[in-house]
Image (cartoon, rainbow, N blue to C red; front, side, top):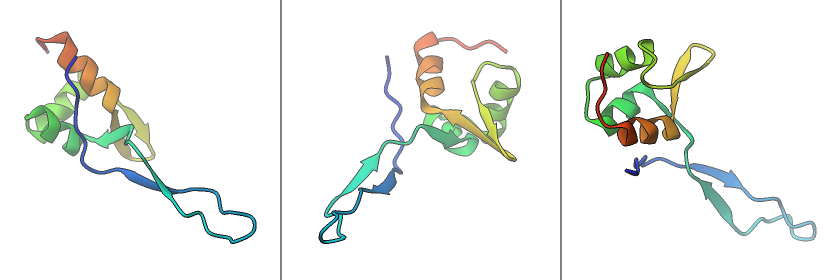
Length: 86
């Protein structure tokens, strides 16, 4: 299975120490969702073609408000499937 690399990550503050009030560390979580533009860039296709893949149901997506987001696992599944036919 091919790995999809997403360059941005999310910084999440760790719980504060009860005595000092400082966390001391920041945990970096891998991104689970990317925008359609980021997905297109990762796949090496145009943004409009990525939206076509979403509309055809070939590329799984979800909506959060008005945003269309792609799970990173959907990109990995698409790459593992090989050929794509619309």
